[in-house]
Image 1 (cartoon, helix red, strand yellow):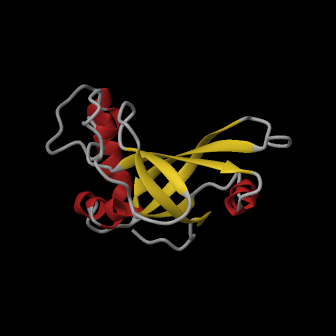
Image 2 (tube, rainbow, N blue to C red; image 1 turned 60 degrees about the vertical axis):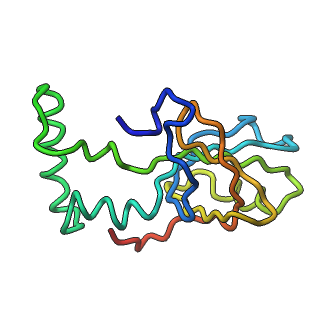
Length: 159
């Protein structure tokens, strides 16, 4: 089972990813027009996993090779068979990144402008001026990180 689903407070991913590819999962309040503050919640994958872990499972790193491997994986799963190797989803470094931002802060316009974007690239650091919460599992306490940048993910990211 992936650590993001750990039911232990200390069972999640222990740190924050310096660079992550993320999708906007939700934001509150739902109507941002009159909001003075909002929380944006991103589901994120550590970029390091995509360059290291992904290539261990899918060595050629191309879509043509990935499709038959994933088709076999899900066929085995739905037929309740056993996998020859480890579950490739267990070691995906998945996080939840919560960004709380006020309307008068610079990141507000930046995030709101890109709502509806498929993928974001989020860069975090151990120090800075804009604190965010990073969750390594659904029950873990957050790890504090500092938002450095958030932008639409580059379309030319290669695996």
